[in-house]
Length: 88
Image (cartoon, rainbow, N blue to C red):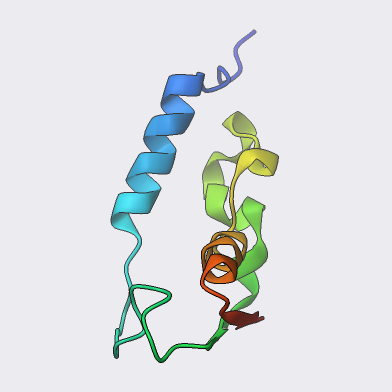
């Protein structure tokens, strides 16, 4: 009562889509798309890259950070398919 309602599955999917569409790469010197030669190693810098809580930000009361895919996890998944080593 009086609290913030939990987000619906549709709202979560919309949030994921928006996050995917708004991620900004500050500088691309031929590293993307991941898997394009000659990339074999990728360094991920910054403590928040592996933090689901950081992705949620101030909306943590109404979200399940455990459901989030961190930047590091997403990069490792994609890079692994292309046999790229990811260092954090």
